[in-house]
Amino acid sequence: MDINEFRKHGKEMIDIIADYYENLNQVPPKSTVKPGYLYKLMPHEAPEEPESFEDIKGDIESKIMPGMTHWQSGNFFGWYPSNSSFPGMLGDMYSSMFNIVGFNWICSPAATELETVVMDWLAKLIGLDKRFLSINEDGTEGIGGGVIQGSASEAQIVAMIAARERMVVHLTSQGASDEEAESMRSKFVAYVSDQTHSATQKGAKIIGCKTRVISADAKFRLTKNALETAVAEDRNAGLVPFFVCGTFGTTNTAAIDDLSGIADVAEAEHIWFHVDAAYAGSALACPEFRPLAIGSERADSFNFNPHKWMLTNFDCSALWVADSTHLVNALSIHREYLPRVKGDTSFVKDYRDWQLPLGRRFRALKLWFVMRMYGVSGIRKHIRTHVSHAKWLEEQLLADGRYEIMAPTVFGLVVFRVKPQAIFGSSIIPEESKRSVNKINSTNVELVKRIQEDNRVFLVGTKVKGNDVVRAAVGSSHGTQENVKQLVQIIKKLTTEVIAENII
Image 1: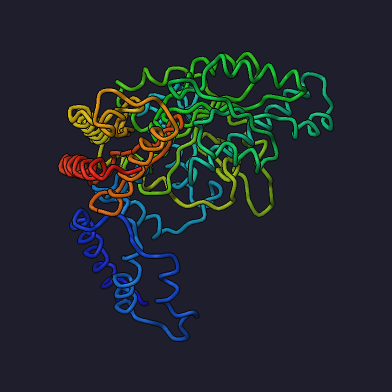
Image 2 (image 1 turned 90 degrees about the vertical axis):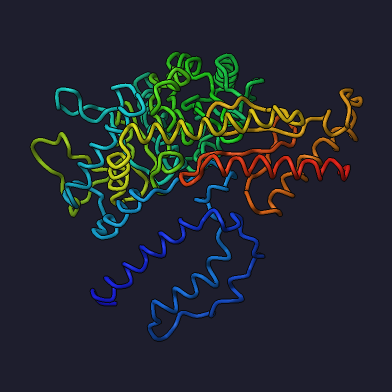
């Protein structure tokens, strides 16, 4: 493909993308293909001769499109959103144009310095403590700072590596030899609740430490008392507590851990405190949600995903550390062909030392485009609109009388179920027996199944305290109130059908 062909087909692609989004709400949101469908449709070897853009475009429509679940649809209420936006796409196009491998400053100074600037912008937008900024108010370099990772899972692993490094340094400062401190790594323990994202446990496996899973309280939170007890038990068993993850907006219910209480324990026990705000961190752009995150200002690291709910195309996961020393010490390996800059290094960050891989894309561009083209006011409007839609959904379900809310609706997630009284047709619930519990659960499982089979909207079920429930995540950047109204209508209609059929 030469320049002229690229110019022609590139313009066609913009029209294809625009048409896709213009018609997206009329397309069933969930793919219905069977496993292995594509293998049967595709050649089993790469083509010997070049093929045309027209042929490939035709295969996109006939072969790829049927296998797509449309995350950007306004009728997608399944998992937490994966926001796309046209400004984000434009930023990605520039990133693809430059196609740099930005492992250090000299690779492309603008790539490093723009990331430093926009990560400080983003920290201020969501009200993070000044400890997390790269550049102090007087223009001098701080010891904290932000870096864009690929996902919250990567961010957690990076934070855990820094935490491990800090604990080794702490043990040697307490009199252990370097060899003794290193040999104790297998005794290091990371703490999570049973509601924490699996990324922490996966990270613990990767870096070779233990995980302690603590039962959440009745509000689905990791609490100070539960953490204190677990840490004391592990210390008595000869283990070394080194890391705790507190969540601001859990995956299952959007619950918020006792961040202040966790910070108390972390400070007293010299444990690295990481805040995982992957989903709900975007809400902190709105000042009214910041009191919910009190305690996060005392964290050692903080992470959220602009690619979830802040209009920035995947992948863009923002991680900040209050002190980058241990992170850089743990991940820095020098080679002669990776030159270091001498002199003033205020904006010279070798971000390769802040992440797992060496290479990195120019992801700051799309975040910069989004923040400039929406502005703070546009981002806040985006978040507040979805929160109001979720509250409206909750109100409609409660007004119907057949549903109960199973977790507080704080952000854009509504967790509910058909309540027992509606299923049994009486205000008197039968004695709690295995048969009655099964009927309650099977009714809600069937409701989710019917909604997915209907395929005008997409949502998923989950379990809350052993109960099968329905989970609707409002947050599509291309969704409107009309999409939520349709969701309510479908839920009500299919609930009537399921109850009438007396599912068990």
